[in-house]
Structure formats: C-alpha cells, structure tokens
Image (cartoon, rainbow, N blue to C red):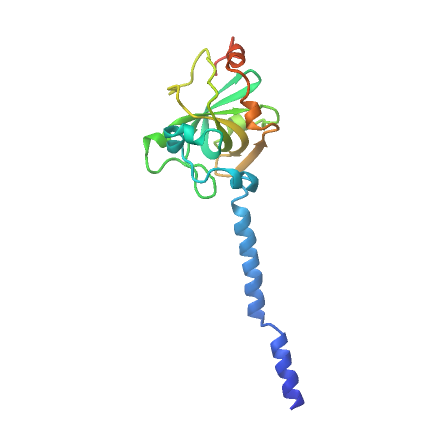
Length: 207
C-alpha cells in the first residue's frame, strides 16, 4: 500500500514530457509573435498611432487626422532641402499587417497617390536615398509646402504632410535596412513659419 501511495504522489507531482514541451513551444510562439510587429515599428509608436489609416482616408478627411500620429508606407520619389529640413516626396505604398509597404493590389487610384514627409536631417542614415521602400511614423500637419523652384512630378498642391517621427528603410529583396528616429517632436519640426520655409527655398537646387 505504501508503495502504491508513493507511486501515485510521484505521478501527480511530475508533469509529462509532452506537457513541458507544449508549454515551452507556447512561450516561444508568444515571444516570436509579440516581437514580430515591433521589428518594423517600435511599440511606443504603434500604441499611439491611429490604427488602419490609409492615404485615401488621410487625403479625404485631413481635418479629422490633423495633429494625429499615423503610419504609412511608400517610395521616395524626390527630395528637397529647405530651411534645415528635408522634404521627401513619397509615392504611397499600402502597409500590410506587419507594417511592410507593398504595391496597391486593389489598384485604387487614391492609394497610388503621393504625400510629403518633413524630417530633421540630423542622424538620417547615409543610404536612406537608396531605400527601396520605407515605413514612416509621422504627425499629420497643415504646414504649407514651400515654393520650390521646381515642384515635384505629379504634385497637385493638396497632398498630406507628415512630420516624421520614425523612418524604417527597406532594402531591395524585402530586408529591413536602417532606421531613424526624430531627435525633436514633429510639432517642433513643423513649427517654422511659412515665410522662413519660403526664404529657405531661394536658390534651392531642384532634385
């Protein structure tokens, strides 16, 4: 009887090997899944950004999103430098669930449009101009676009402007490349008066 009791206690106290492996596998999958979406965009930005915002929504209802943080994707089409700021003219690329930009499969005209990114150039990766694609976290602004000597192709004058907070570059082949985070809040970056920006555009070398 004593042997039977000890055997029963041993069986209860000792979990099966399969249970242990299932627990380990669950933890690994949880950690992998929890980190996947932060590889592209840091958690602090994802938690603050308006979820699911598209260029179509942003361009159609600019007043609704003004001052709010959004995440978009795109391809750098042109670059201008004015008043100590970099203005990137970006062709939109919709984001997937992992914040990776892709060509618009729906062929929606408004999703193939353009928008501006304004960034403080300090600390920008040297190869950012060669990024195949980028993911941007920015704050929506109504700051006027400077009067460049030559406006970019496909410019209509009403495209959204984002004050950049975070940029993630993608190399050719779909690999994550460099990342950049603003040293100043986007509100400060975009606080330059329009007259200062226009003065900075004098003699700008069009790219």
